[in-house]
Image (spheres, rainbow, N blue to C red):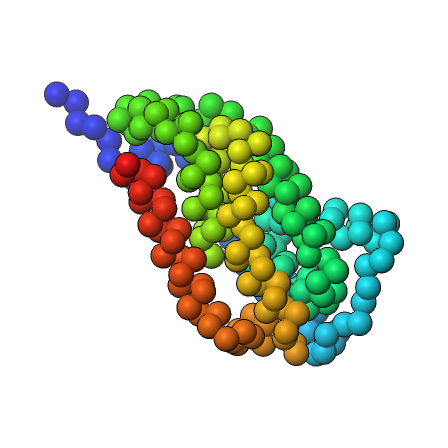
Length: 232
């Protein structure tokens, strides 16, 4: 009897055969943190106080959406950080534009992930037929998985875009359920930015009462939802 390859060996072989997907997964996992280390000191060095800036014209709004789409969709910054900076610099006037940026960033991330991934997930699942059957049987209820993944405050936005692209969940479900799932943590981060006196307090300190409790609540809800999705 041929011994079945372990999960880690299977992933290693998958990475060798699908180098572009492996590099993309590495990029979306590491790049947001690296760029954050560059972005935060740059902005703080300009000013330690909230900026008095307004976005009142269509060209300004368009630039904000384009920048947000590229930065989040290409994994140049974490979505939470971008939400904090938006609230800190511009205030509530940009919240609708932020949601619009999330939507386009989702489409961008899903698009390039699908183009890179191709049928690579199917190739990987040929080694694990039970997992393939389970994923196939869950396609009609994948919206729940998208929601609980998006609501998690610890699962990277860009990484989840890549994973959903490999799963071929469909962009409509991803946009609808992903946007709904992103709203709680987006509002929390954005509100923290509007109340902060400087960037460091927005990111590292308690900007609103009970923020830690809300963070933990979203995390537990996400874990429960994902676990229930695969155990149901």
